[in-house]
Image 1 (tube, rainbow, N blue to C red):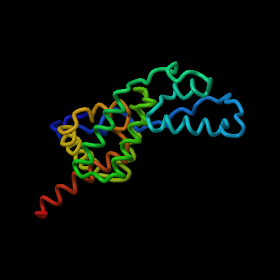
Image 2 (image 1 turned 60 degrees about the vertical axis):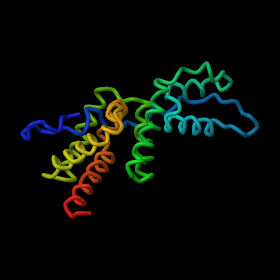
Image 3 (image 1 turned 135 degrees about the horizontal axis):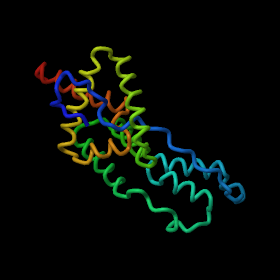
Image 4 (image 1 turned 180 degrees about the vertical axis):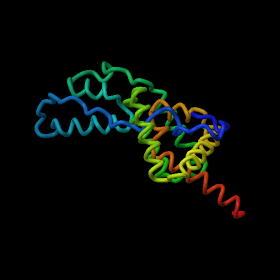
Length: 199
């Protein structure tokens, strides 16, 4: 995160050094046996993809489960960080308590969970940060720095209530997700507008 008190002349980067999320790697082809039409390769892949997308499994766990459907679930590779699930759940509860829209909370949690299940590399984060900044500049032009500052300020306020939020955004790569940046900036600007209008 770039400090909100940085000199005005410094060119701000998106919210974090993380990048927009890369699509999670597709699970390896399955050798799922024919179980009388109840479970097919496509069904197994879809179920595994859904578990990865929700952050329940990592891509490695999905691949291992698809490679050996009869394997003991306890023998699957351990989740990268089981505490991430509780951190995201805590974040959702905190945001709900602060009046965020449920759809927005679920959308952010989905983006974060996908990134945690398949974290982007530092190189991918840097590349995506540049793409995100370019998208912001093409959409907002000379108001881009203002939008980024509004998003940073909102994140700073939220992080006071949810200290692990910055870490989740950084590790998942979601800190530079265009949708998340726009949501944070919009919420901050709405708050300023209400304060200015006395509402």
